[in-house]
Length: 387
Ligand SMILES: *Cc1c(COP(=O)(O)O)cnc(C)c1O
Image (cartoon, rainbow, N blue to C red):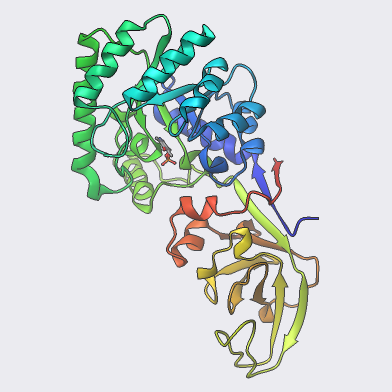
């Protein structure tokens, strides 16, 4: 048996998707972003649950993720690759109707060749450079791409025109985002004048859709929010301020965490005063203490930076991590907890009783982003769907 496991909550997910649908309205498609092993939730378990909520569009970063998603999704779902593909992998994508971003003319020409060879049109999204300065077509490259598209209408299907924002979760980037929105709109009009019309314009990630409603357009690529996390504390605050301004009651958090990471107590023992616990001398007992070991360590994604800082939940109460996080083990303080026995449930992330270990507490202490802490949870840990 595995030393820890992860529960994925159907109900929490369904609630998040309902909330996000309400945010974007019924005319905007939701694309579920499942890159990074579905932000650590596990593509194989997570993607079918999203499908069960009525979502039929999925975004991944690369061809290997697309292949995994493709295996677990039903036939009527669509997979879109936002990032990396080698030219030699284009045929795989085209043959399966998987769409992909075009941000350089080379890939576009290779797509034309592959599509001609297969006799199947390549489904593409033209990614526009609007200010993120990572990938995206602009200037002469964009003009050349337009020429290639116009000359190859029979083997290219423009599924979308898109871009990505440079940090919509922070007000510090306000003007940069606003400029990106303007640039996108201008370039889209130019494209339409030259005869490139796409039915689907998509630019927004979670933060953009929540904070700049005009970015939702025809489709939103929701990542972090569908898993039940706000993109930043600011986004969350802004949402609640918005409720206040509209004189709506500020209810409970509309987003519910989908993931709970659990393990069990491996061993329990007493340590006298003046003893060091674990490697080295990070933790010195000041009194007689009861400690327990939990078979989870930095190998599994429990950040080493949480040494002597983090908490887990046992019997619904917090228990502090003592000393260094090891590769496979943490030691916790259970002095205050009464009878804890081997095999008792430990919650590493998520709720137990009335308490919760949030990813943000987990990650702020280790100065990680939500995103980073989630994707560091080892893929080998079994994921199971629960209600
Ligand atoms: C990851 C990603 C998203 C989703 O971002 P969230 O902040 O998790 O909602 C959207 N678009 C692109 C291009 C991405 O890479």
